[in-house]
Structure formats: structure tokens, C-alpha cells
Image (cartoon, rainbow, N blue to C red; front, top):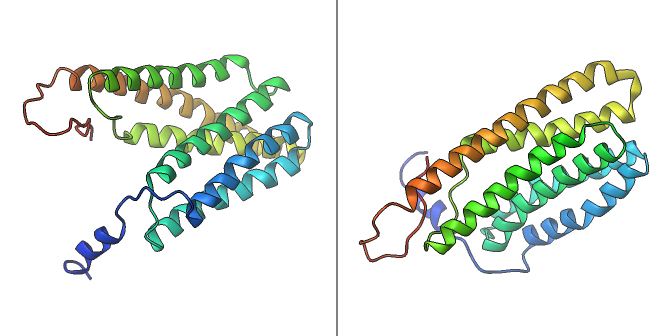
Length: 211
């Protein structure tokens, strides 16, 4: 099973510039559900908000699977996917903070880290580099936050299990916030290192040195 089939698989998953693909349509649907989720959460309709979040998570898995399966990996899809994840995290944070279920400092911590990444992206672009690859710490942090917030919503939707689900959600949230900033500091250090690398190879510079 190893060996020969692998090159062909890589070929089929080349990144395209297509916009109207089935995975991208699913991503647009997921993005369109963000305000629906936020309104339901602010209105205290926790079960309905949770259902929307589950549907959004299902489309998140499905669009990635279809993109690989159908050979429809696109640059737009690569932008929409993380954007949708962050918007759901922000929406959940804002909704829960507005209802005083999570502290506002947690919202500021998460937002400030993404502002830092935006600034680092501007610095990289001004030096002719593309964005840094996603660090594994950033992936773990996003994973923690992406599960922490639904668990906190679940605790509100079903008070009978809140004493079990709530602490688990808070544990995921605390670790997620910590790792989110740890990854941000790693990106900052790597950005400082990358922009100091001499560019005399003649090719288009790319910040692909992070592992």
C-alpha cells in the first residue's frame, strides 16, 4: 500500500483557485450559521444554539473530507476553514461573556492573541514573506477552545449534567487559552528569525521554516 500510489494522491490534491466547489459551499453555509448561533446563544436558547454548533462542526468535517476526496482543495477553502473556526470561537465567547457565564478577560486574551498574529502577518508580508505554517501548539490550542466552548454551552442547555460537563469545559478553556498564547509567542519568535534570513536564492520567499 506504500510507495507507488502516493505520488498520484499528491497530484490529485493540488490547490486550485476555484471558488464554487461543494466544500466551499459547505464552508459558506457554516459561516452563514455564525450569526444564527450567536443570536440563539444571546437569547438563552442553548439547546438550539448547540444544535447549530453540531451542524456547523459536521460541515467542518465534511467539507475537508470532500475537498480531499473530490480533489477540490482550494485556496479559498484554506482561508474559509480557519476563519469559520475562529468566528465560532469568538461568537461563543461573546455570547457566554454577555450572559456573564465566562469572564470578559478570557475574551480579551483570545482576541489579543489573534491581533498579535495579524500584526505578525503584516510584518511578514512587508518583508516579502507569506504566512507562517500552523504550529502544532496552535492546532492543539484551537482544538481545546473548539471543544471547551460547546461543553460550556452544553452545561447551560442541560443543567443536570453541568456539574460534570462544566469543569471539563473550563479545563479545556484554560489550557486552550494558555496554549493559544504559547503558540502566539512561538510565531513571534519565528517571525523575528524568518525576516532575518538572507534571501539570495532568487525564488519567491516563503516562511516555510517552522516545524
